[in-house]
Image 1: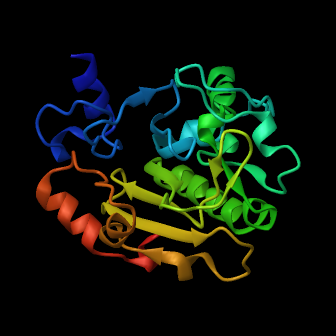
Image 2: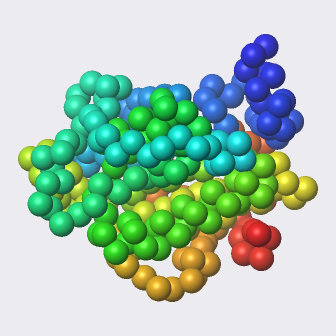
Length: 245
């Protein structure tokens, strides 16, 4: 009953397929993958690349307006029993410890803030990217959560073979990062995705927008599969840039 109450309270219940096993924003879990759940987000960890394959969470208006201070306390993730990257991997590498799920999205509790600094949520990002256009996209998505009351978010690196790597744990350096965003709370449900190269850019964010179907082809990840088929198909096949405030 508690699970049902959660989905009803967020307006998701009538848009879901029957008996969802994970939070609605969770991508489809593939054979051999292990789903890990923190308080603030769920994720699948990629051992080969030593970072999360994706991070999924719902960001509400209340959470987006949280006031807890940024901790900057980077730690290995205790849920990843095989071990994650560490300080030594990034030291003198020239790359930022780039958040996949941003710390500013996690200001609603001390626990969520602490979780945002786990190395499972870090990826090697070029400083001009992490502090520039990636930060702008994070701020834009956070503003949508405030305006629309809540949004569903999946974010991560595009992990491909033969990526360059850093550190003793051979942490892969992705060439691209993505975000997929769905709004189910507004008067008209909508979805949008972004793929950004790991490089500084002054181009407008909407030049990097694409449909979720296009993102699925690039990542081989099935996003938002728990939504009703007709809703999923309509959301993921269409991109309406002007629909987003």
